[in-house]
Length: 291
Image (tube, helix red, strand yellow):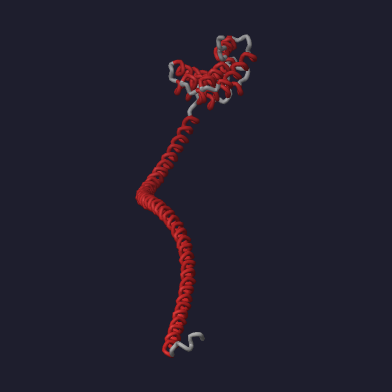
């Protein structure tokens, strides 16, 4: 106002221009400031986003790392399983081959057995035929033998019997000559022709003795027993008991032998046979061990 009188219109316009220019600059500065502020906010937002991405990347990295470890472990397990599978497959193939070989072997054996069985059936059939023919021949022969024996017996029955003493002496002579089988047959015939006679007990004793001499101890024991049963009072009884007991020892039936000899000693204590029996019993006793 002080200078209004002196300033020109041009000066006023110039000032006004400057003021307007300053206002424009201020406006630009405001806009620029707002832009900077907006950029700062965007930068902060981007920074937070970046931090979030970094955190997410770390999480993903850790997950990837864990997955990788698991993958490696799984790969190792798969490799192990593959190895076991290969072993199992090899073993299975091997077993299959072995089983196949065994099967082939069994089939071959079965075929061989079938062949053998058929062969045996054929042989059995032939043997049955031969046996049937042989049985027929044997039956025919047996029948003929029976007829011959019947005729022989008829002739013997018709012929006069020799004296019992003569028959006994002939049989005894055969025994003394060592012909035990012939003597046994003659003594047996004597007992058949003369069932009970004065020589019956002696005949049975010599039959038993003939078996004993031939070392046929089982038949000797039976024959001695027949004598003792049918002729308990015979003078041959002590000898029969002694030899029967010794026959039992000969076939390793020591307990029966012991019982028989003890029976002899009890029944005929003063006999010479009793002394022999006692000697045998003493020899058979188990020897005491020396201390």
